[in-house]
Picture 1: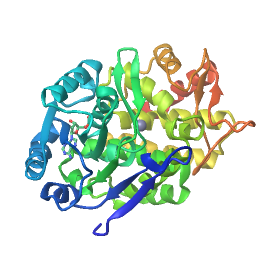
Picture 2: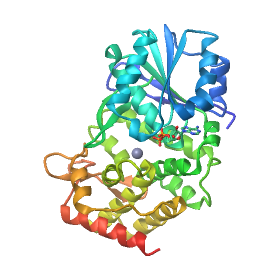
Picture 3: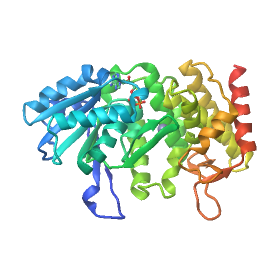
Length: 375
Ligand code: ADP
Ligand code: ZN
């Protein structure tokens, strides 16, 4: 990928001030380090990163930025377990110690954990400062760095404290994937598969034809996923309706993730979640069997490829977590479900959130367990 791909995220509902660009290009991080890519005006830049990414890229970027502007760096221990309010507090304290003011810009350099947490802190520090995203995992590049959702996890569920705060720019360097462990690549492929099932049948069949899922994943999948996400977020920033389609697989997926105490990777949970939710769509007669099977086959392949053990799937626990999902109101679990590969279902009144009964929810967990335990 030598040409730089530009994708614009715009918000028709208000001023154009908040619109921003996603730039995708190999070595774009090197361009930032070397100072050949212009950054916005700011009093200072504070890189927020985790310990792993710091070692690989953080100190290099800090050195590069320090040559041309005032710059600082805050690092916290890696892992979803640290995406909590205590870490947010520490990062904010560090920003203050480094003298960050309202005209400072936060640079989120890392995976989804860094992006969500740094974005969250940026949204509340002195009532909000600007931030840039430099996602370094596949998952963050195709999903979490775009769209302005920020937040931290709480003991009662994932992303339970958060804000909408759009970044001023997203810089995607697919070369950073070369250092990423294989299971982290798979984690991102799950969100690419989700995008394809939600909005792009052609992309789905291309993805199904891949024989391996590694850091050489064709760049066109990253670009397409970003385009899909940018389009949906531009249309429905605050998730009043359409944006929930990106939550496909996530009602059951987040429940599995929360009940595993975040030991399972998000992408694997979403893969399992899409398997359960596609069964629900089939059982509710929203989705045809052929499209169910095509989709299930790819998802099962991703699951096997990951060689993780099937987690304990307790229906009561999962249902309890599903009820804390943000799509849920009162006592009804709602999901976003496919009507065919590439199209999501809406109720008669145009709602992408479909109510699902406890019986069908339970049935999907039984199905999942059966489908995955016998090989
Ligand atoms: P996600 O992006 O899936 O939300 P994390 O932000 O937790 O996940 O990142 C997953 C792991 O990969 C973390 O341990 C993080 O430090 C590490 N990591 C992130 N980017 C890279 C990279 N480019 N190379 C190597 N390791 C990375
Ligand atoms: Zn996700």
